[in-house]
Length: 472
Image (cartoon, rainbow, N blue to C red; front, side, top):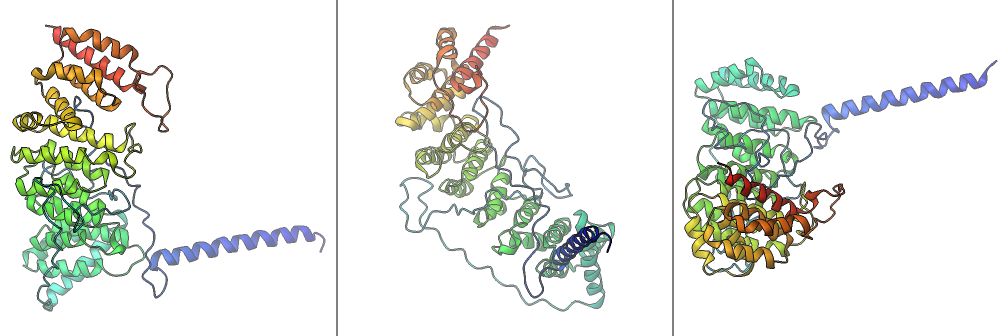
């Protein structure tokens, strides 16, 4: 042994290479099949980090696209358009917060009288009726169904349906064997599998393309499932169900889900729709939740409602929620992607709804006549944003007297709608010296930046709008 150190080094290198190869082989085996004799699934390697639902902007600005669902399905015949169902397209995860929050009132909890929230204790959900036992398939249909499952799984790595899979879906539908095809796909959906996420996503896509009443019912069952093994894809099933649903009553069924992401999909699907009294009551109960996302989405649905029905009940629900959110646990913390606290961001969404809701002027006027305190201030800002000039003097008095920097900011922005030349000096003074500074929530401060002073920034915008009114 002329060079024992060199041989020792070579042995160590070979040993490390062997260990790495063994670890890779073990990982590959567990990723494909899962641990033997267990039902443990591989991690969700496809899911993106959950993106918080962004709240709507201030009442003076147009709503952003933030509350729309980032879709993943292409449109199909019979599916509603994006204008009526922005949440009808399954995508990566869209689950919202990780902890599911039930929005229905707790049984036995006292409800405020005379409101939609006082609907009595929550009724337990009745178990779904079990259908008749499946009939055995004939040989031809069984062969087609087996081939369908095989073709669907072929497209799983790319989350696509092969041409043959789409042809089989059409052929099975044409043979009036749709129910059997749905059952075969669901059987495959529930099988233990190491890569269950991609497999189940493409099965959901197959059910969506099938588009039959049986497939839609299966998607609803998957969306409302509380099986912890499938929570990653429940929101995908909910989006596919929404894309096949044109009726508001059907979309409301998603609000019974235990999974937060599924409830959010259902709430998004109700935006820009027509909400009758029953739908208004169901959405108002969601404002009992401690989920800030639900409050934002309910307000967005109310603000874009086209029915002009039950407008008074909608306003009452928003005002009652505004009286509670400031005292909810943790709602004093900054909202995601915002400089405002959670309760302020929720209140901003309520203002947006009352400022944009069609046909709500009379309801706001009636409640303004008797409202006091915070609720009166919110209605005052909403009326000003809607252009009611007769409340101008009270709005200016509120700007001068309120101690809430948040409400002063909203009031100053709404003054742009009803302000006159007499308000220029007030706005210039606010732009120059208003003391309200946004709290430091981790966002970098820029020295001298007016955007750290929202009242000053709102006054600047209001001045520009007042000047633009003078131009011919």
